[in-house]
Amino acid sequence: MLAPPDSGEVAFLAAVPNTNRVIAALSGAGLFVTDDGGAVWTHLGSGAGSAQITHGPSSLTFDPEHAGVFWESGIYGSFGDGLYTTKDEGVTFTQLGTIGHNDFLTIDFSDPARKLLLAGTHEQSRKLFKSVDGGMSWMDIGMNVPAGTGFSVLPLIIDAQNYLLGINGTGTVGVYRSANAGMTWASTATDSPYGWPLRASDGNIYWLLNGTGMIISSDQGKTWRKAGAGPTQTMSAGPMELPDGRIVTLGPTHVIVSADKGATWQEVGEKLPFPTQNCQTYGFTYSAPTRTFFINHNNCSGKLIADTIWTSGWDYTK
Image 1 (spheres, helix red, strand yellow):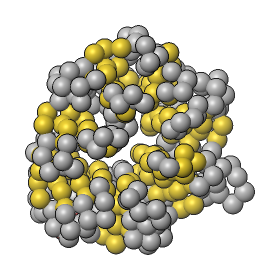
Image 2 (tube, helix red, strand yellow):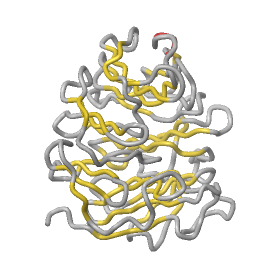
Image 3 (cartoon, helix red, strand yellow):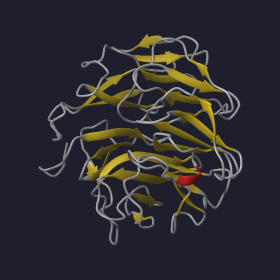
C-alpha cells in the first residue's frame, strides 16, 4: 500500500459503515483509505489546514447517523497527540484537547450535539478522561474508579448517566458500571475485556476477553453471560454486527458468525492465512457493501510489511 517508507505496522482496519470504504490505521503515519478493495490507498488528513495524526492509532468511532463523521484515538504520540475528529470523511482532522496516550474513545450518541465523550488511557490505572464540550476540554475522573483496579482502557457510554468501563492489565480487572455519570463505579463482570466493545442494534453489548471467549450483556451492562466457545482475542478492533443482525468475529483459524446472540458460532469463508494471534492475524473488518473480509497481519517487527493486508470475499446474504 502507498505509505511512507518508515511507517509502522497496520494497527487496525475499519470498514466505514454503509460505504465501500475501508480505513487502515498505520502507526506513526496516520490513516489511509481505499475505495476499491485495496488496490489504491489514499492518505487521509491531506486537506488544507488538517491536523496531522502521528501517533499509534488505537480506535475509530463512527457517528451512526453520519458516516463521514468519526473520531480517532491513539497512543505513544507527542504531548496532547491523543484524539482527533473529522466531519468531512477524513479530508481534514481537528485535534481534541491536550490529552494523549488514549486506547479508546466513546461518544454519547443519544445527544444530537455529541458533547459528552469519555477517553480511556493506555496501560494507566484510575485515569479516565471526560469531556462535556465535544472534546475541547477534559477532566480526569479516573480517581472515582475503585482503588486497586487495573488499566482504565475501554469506556463505553450508554447514555448521559450510564457508563461502562472495561479494565484489564495488572490489578483487579473486569467491567465496571456507573449509573451517576462517572461519580461512582461498581463491578458487574470479573473477566478481563479486550478490544473495542460492540453495542449492537438490538442493545446487546458484546465484549471479547483477554485470550479467548466473549461476554454479552442484554441489560446495558448490569449483568453478563459467557458466549459459546469460538471467539478469540483480536489484537485490534473487536466484534462486528452484520446488516442482518448476526455477530461476526475471529476464531482461531476462521472468521466465525453467530445467529443466536453468541450462543453458538459457525466458521465461514476461507481459512485465515495466519492463525488469530499476535504477530499473525492481528485483526479484521468486514465491508458489507462489497461482501469482503479484510484482515491485517504483522510479524512483530514494528514495520509495515508487504503482505500486511489480505482480503477474501464472503456474501453474508447467502
